[in-house]
Image 1: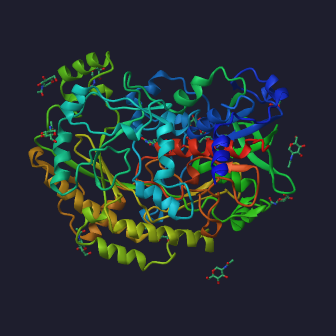
Image 2: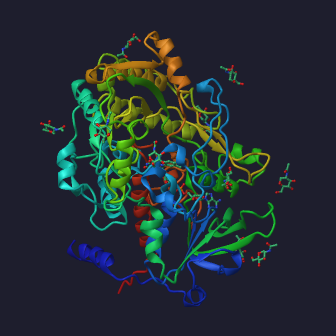
Length: 628
Ligand SMILES: Cc1cc2nc3c(=O)[nH]c(=O)nc-3n(C[C@H](O)[C@H](O)[C@H](O)COP(=O)(O)OP(=O)(O)OC[C@H]3O[C@@H](n4cnc5c(N)ncnc54)[C@H](O)[C@@H]3O)c2cc1C
Ligand SMILES: *[C@@H]1O[C@H](CO)[C@@H](O)[C@H](O)[C@H]1NC(C)=O
Ligand SMILES: *[C@@H]1O[C@H](CO)[C@@H](O)[C@H](O)[C@H]1NC(C)=O
Ligand SMILES: *[C@@H]1O[C@H](CO)[C@@H](O)[C@H](O)[C@H]1NC(C)=O
Ligand SMILES: *[C@@H]1O[C@H](CO)[C@@H](O)[C@H](O)[C@H]1NC(C)=O
Ligand SMILES: *[C@@H]1O[C@H](CO)[C@@H](O)[C@H](O)[C@H]1NC(C)=O
Ligand SMILES: *[C@@H]1O[C@H](CO)[C@@H](O)[C@H](O)[C@H]1NC(C)=O
Ligand SMILES: *[C@@H]1O[C@H](CO)[C@@H](O)[C@H](O)[C@H]1NC(C)=O
Ligand SMILES: *[C@@H]1O[C@H](CO)[C@@H](O)[C@H](O)[C@H]1NC(C)=O
Ligand SMILES: *[C@@H]1O[C@H](CO)[C@@H](O)[C@H](O)[C@H]1NC(C)=O
Ligand SMILES: *[C@@H]1O[C@H](CO)[C@@H](O)[C@H](O)[C@H]1NC(C)=O
């Protein structure tokens, strides 16, 4: 017993005895390389995608100075200084050049509308362009992952990685006191690459909105939105530095600080096409092409001595797998791709947070309020002055107060009948590519969600509020599922994307209840003299509210995930708890695709934690240990 413990300790504390490749490292001189002519023929690790997770894993694997690491990214560096300002966090500011261009298929749950798609195409990925809202899901959300057959992937297993990836920058004590900002710093790290902070200003109307939630029985959660708590009203941080209030993201945290590392290369402007497998299904190489080259021309091959790690995001990780012959047989056959592994989960289990909007007007709004930049030039001017010290109203991003509400709080009278309706379903609402195993996976998820619906340990809806008069309400535990599949006419074109939004009628039932709840919430904000604008007080029937939900609905909060999920193969999983892909060797996934179920939060903090854990798992399996 004792000797076993000693051995484990010894393994954990040994310096890395990795095999070094001095001949490879000799050739590396520069981090960012712009053409395949500068590429070595082989690396120890090839990371596909230099987005959020790809830069985390690239950084951590290249800490072993004996390992040569290549990250290949389709996008480029975005050096626009305004991209790190708080103002870059709002929807209208998302830079088109850093996004992929594609449209969903008609959404049958939303009257056959189509939708644009949020998927980042830039070094740092989503973290470079996102809204910087930096909260976490409930502990119960991650515990669901573990219950699906993934030991080590619950809240307890992930918390060390949430901490490792973050540094908490506390608010100024006077500011915290003035606004009653509450948090528990122990849920964050103290030296992690990504900073979590609060602005120095809040709109006074948010206090009235907060109190109105309390009046409806939603408790204040004092520990903050990183603590894994349940139904409640929370303070949440932004992914910004506390002093300058600048974007803290994968590039600033994980890429810029390792400029001097000789064993790390980032190739920008290249698209990875396929993974090449040897006869025994070992992932040998990747093939790639400069993004502006004509299709099929000048394909370059790079070999991985140890492992290829896919970090191309929820949209392209399944596409690369399918192009390489790993995916649902019918999808590959339709696209004339030779099937190496029939793995139905690749591109299935697609989830995002849909949401709907309700619009109100405040006839006696608090002063100042978010309109004051426009309506009060004194306020506007003083804000500009304060921002010279990086303080005041312009230090605000998307807002830092949020309600995350469980179903019994949304509808105390109806939540049990909603659960009954859900448990009477089978798999009739799933997209056509779902097979026996992916259907079994959904049934297992359904049972977990039904159990969650009965309690207050996690949220079914998120309502961010910060003084504005209208609200966007996000469905945090969607039952509807979508799919990502190769375009049969051109496997190098963007894949076919089906969001599946509101195809499961229980999702619609819940959103109707959420609209009714929202009306009660506004009614409780008496000081603001609220007036409903849309859908309007005349709409009262469930049918009318259902139409209002659909008309104002958007399919995505840019939280796409789960398309190469961590689950047992029998449940439609694509990777095992080690994150390696079933049926092959030398290939793993480290991005948001591995999430089995979307957590009830914005997704970036979870991606950092998952990628940090992925890096530890990868390092551990390639570490050579002397056994005397
Ligand atoms: C507009 C927007 C707003 C968001 N707002 C928030 C928010 O406020 N808070 C929050 O927590 N989360 C937010 N998110 C979500 C969060 O940023 C993402 O969940 C997270 O960044 C995903 O990380 P990832 O590593 O899985 O993928 P990404 O960061 O998207 O990285 C994938 C990378 O792979 C590259 N790639 C793809 N295919 C290939 C290929 N074939 N070859 C080479 N490279 C390839 C892509 O160009 C991309 O850079 C937002 C996302 C977006 C897009
Ligand atoms: C093809 O790629 C090689 C390096 O792999 C490069 O030297 C050459 O310029 C490229 N040719 C074209 C036409 O892009
Ligand atoms: C998407 O289109 C914009 C132009 O609207 C372009 O700048 C950008 O490069 C395109 N994105 C990709 C990934 O090709
Ligand atoms: C949506 O499209 C489907 C398939 O084409 C069709 O059956 C259905 O009637 C359409 N729905 C609406 C509301 O137009
Ligand atoms: C802050 O909280 C305290 C106690 O929780 C409360 O008495 C006080 O009114 C609050 N102040 C504001 C400005 O909300
Ligand atoms: C991988 O690339 C090497 C070097 O180019 C080549 O010899 C090998 O055949 C490739 N492997 C596969 C499976 O194509
Ligand atoms: C399918 O692929 C094979 C070989 O990979 C090729 O010979 C054939 O022309 C392809 N068929 C179509 C319809 O693209
Ligand atoms: C605030 O003032 C600045 C500088 O005078 C001006 O450019 C800006 O348009 C004003 N903002 C609004 C919302 O009116
Ligand atoms: C305009 O803003 C200034 C500075 O914040 C404030 O003192 C003043 O009361 C505001 N005026 C109105 C009409 O709200
Ligand atoms: C899928 O499930 C059905 C019904 O349970 C069964 O009849 C069928 O044989 C299964 N197919 C496969 C491929 O397992
Ligand atoms: C509960 O369900 C009934 C019947 O569907 C509906 O009329 C009522 O408005 C619902 N209540 C809430 C709070 O959602």
